[in-house]
Length: 248
Image (cartoon, rainbow, N blue to C red; front, top):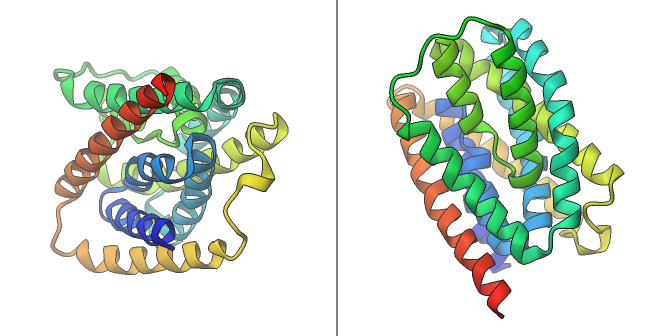
C-alpha cells in the first residue's frame, strides 16, 4: 500500500504538470516507478500511464494538435522502440537502472545545457526525433526531452507543441508496450495486480482536472522546470540504486 500511495502521488503530480506544460508524466513517473517496482516493470507501467494521460489530455485540447507533425514522428517512433525493447530484455536489472538514470540525466542536461540552437526547417528532424524518442520511451519511459530539443530546432510554437505531444506520447506508449510484449521484455507474473488499473485511471483523471484549473495561473515554463527538477532527482536516485545493485 505504501508503494501504491507513492506511485499514485507521482502519477498525480506528473499528470498535473503534463496538463499544464505538455510534458511531465514520463519525467516524474518513470524514475519514481523504476525505484519502486524495478526498471522493467516501472517503465512498462509508465508507458501505460502515458497512454491514458496522452489520450485524455488530447481529447481536451485536440483542436490545437498538429496532426501532420504527429504523422511524421509516430511512424519513426515505431522503429525506435524496437532496440529499446531489446535493451530492456537483455540488460540485467542493475545495468538497466543505470541506463535509465543516465538517459534521464543526459536528456535533461542536453535539453537545458545547449545554447540557442539553429533553426532546422527540414522534416527529417521530426523523423529523427521520433526514432530517438521511441528508443528513450521504450528503455526509460521518457521522450519529452527529445521532443523539447526538436521543438527548439524547428521553432515549434508552445500551444500546438503542447497539444501534439499528447497523441505522440500516447502512440509511443502503445508502441513500447507492443514491442516489449512481442520480445518478451517483461514477465506477466511480476506485474502489479489488475485492480491497480482503475486506480491509475482515477488518479490520471484527477490530475487532468487539477491541471486544467492550474492552467489559468501557472505558466507552462514554470511547470516544465518543476517536472525537470523532479526528473533530475529521480534520475540520480535511479543511477545510484543501479550502481549499488551491481556492487551488491
